[in-house]
Length: 452
Image (cartoon, rainbow, N blue to C red; front, side, top):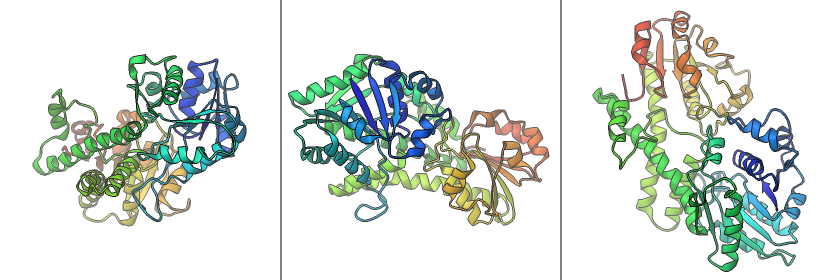
């Protein structure tokens, strides 16, 4: 068997590396038109950071795992083709700001139809709106050759920062396909690949539409939980309650559970906002306006939480940040990844710059060029500086803000940091990972999210 994955991004690269690792008899090729990205996958410095990924790629690369820019060859030789290309939110035309932009998916399908000369199983790996499989099928049915295609939905449920563990021990593998003998055969073929290391009872099969919708729904539910506890954090601050204590209390209820009840400056990443907005657009498209409004509030609450964090900094620092130095610890949207897509830090830094604050940013994995690009400023911008350590960022700062929950921030020498900051020294824990009582004993004026 030969597998080809079109798209060498955060999903395609790690997923194919795991398949190659667990199935050494299957040839796995990841193709992409981005020459630099493919070169990085073939180098000692991979384009993405995930714990354990380097070892898995090194073990399988050039044995049965290959990275190539030869898209046509990859498609032509493959029995199974994964489509793992970007599906960003549209910025133009109908559905702008909410709907998924499917231009890359369509281009991908057209390329398969153009090149394929033998029967293929085509697998949707990207997060897609419900019934996208029908669009793909329509394009493939007009293939100039006599090749037959089966289109499956196999959404990813990876959490960045734990992607390798999620691939090794998934909660479930979901495969949706056509309800026909040919569809069932295709589903079984793909299921047999995953069954090489995933227990059969964790491999769930559905019709293709249920599979597509399940991915959007899963992310919407997770985002909803985060926005819900963040809404309560605002009430906690107004009433002197402690949001961590509230979360612990309700998390012991077996009907609720403790996961995704950590108050913070808000969620980020490539999926949550995009998928919730996609769900909003789908509901509007089908005339379910009340349902659309319900899910849109999840995004509004997330935006409110970021704005509230900045306003608290402004208010605490005597209602002006002009000329003041603010240390920003963390820029990735979460720890253990270098992904900055929709990171809360982007919006917080932009708002602080609007207030004429001088931001000094430190993140252990995000390169300076990415930070400048995300904020939207040139590298010589007078209000944006990239630091080589947390200590450097905090030197002579009026305040520091923890924006990403990197483990190293929990063990910083805050006594030494305090001594080198301007007084009063303000500390804002946007991820609730620090012991504020101990920090107050050092001398910091501290603020958490939903706790004092």
